[in-house]
Image (cartoon, rainbow, N blue to C red; front, side, top):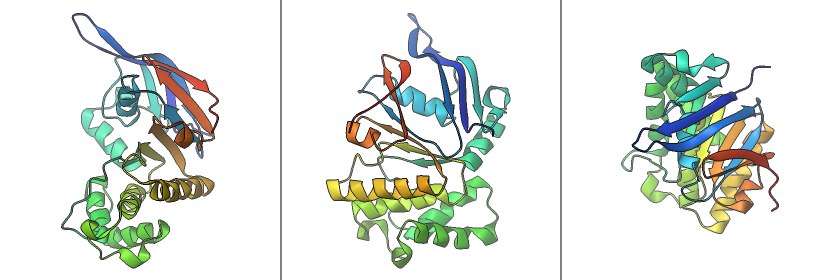
Length: 227
């Protein structure tokens, strides 16, 4: 089975002077259906790792394979298209359009993912039902709780059928109860076979993953994290 993510000595150094090694050469393998959490303090290299994994930045060394595609061999346009088809992003800030309904927010995102027009509405509605918001499809984000807004963001990430759900501090703006509900939803998605990569600074959130990778001073290493 082809790994979803495969890092082969992937690293990123920002040019100087002096050069700054933001992510030192590392190996990482994420198989279909994995739930991997990445933990580290501020300034550890988490953002650099996220940007590389999400095809927002290109590594300066090594090879990154996403679903078997050598991302370094792709043109900028092909890399952007691969990101749109294969990766669903969930951010700490929900990034919802405030004057568009939940359904419209999810539907509009598919314009950029190559989903045929006729499929966008039904897919958006199905995704909202999947995250427990079938009764809120016509609600504006301003009328939703923080937890509900994050679930809309997750529905938006799922609607195009990605192979990877990439979450950056998805509970960072939520109260304890809402954070628990969002993490419970991620557990359900994982149980259904979704591959999840979640970046966090919270040990309790990190412990929800089946595997945890720690990053510090640009060094990535797998570890066990106690809840």
